[in-house]
Amino acid sequence: MKKLLIAAMLFAAPAGLSSATAADYKIDIEGMHAAINFKVKHVGISWLTGRFDKFDGSFTFDENNPSASKVIVDVDVSSVNSNHQKRDEHIQDPGYLNTEANPSAHFESTSVEVTSDDTGIIHGNLTLNGVTKPFDLHASFVGMGDDPWGGYRSAFEATAVIHPEEFDYKFKYGDVYLELYIEGVRQK
Image (cartoon, rainbow, N blue to C red):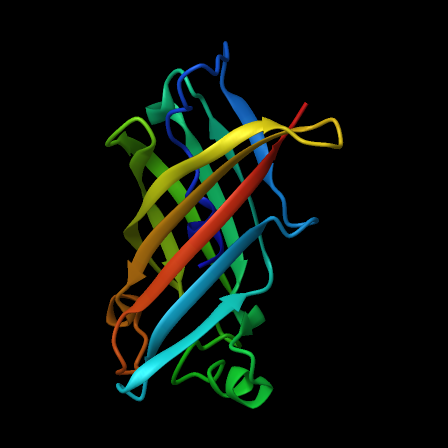
């Protein structure tokens, strides 16, 4: 899930902003201006929500040619946090997230399909639980500009749905819904 979560930030810049070339960004995990959240049905009745506390990634964003953008995200699946330590330990078992055998997830984009001035679909491959499958992130541009520390940032948000059986997970409580909030710091 790691890398799949960072892919959410690659679309057209708002009118009035100009840039000559593509820029490379590092996801701001140091300042925690990024998040990968999830929700899944709890025993098929209500929603269980949580997040992954450890992930990293980068993206290249070309506001003049957003379809040329690229995203890479790595997620430490064992950093799952549902705000309940015993449950977090339990859902790392082989019958659920299987983190001992497959502690990380990786997403890498293969293309970006621009669907409007500020939205698009990031197509890529997600490796999760040792299985690699095509995976899409539905992303929206949030904003970009100078920060108070002399840097420049771009931000995106994205949603995605994981169908557990496609990644050889055995739990039967339905799909996992992801929400990604990504802010990247432009690299000099």
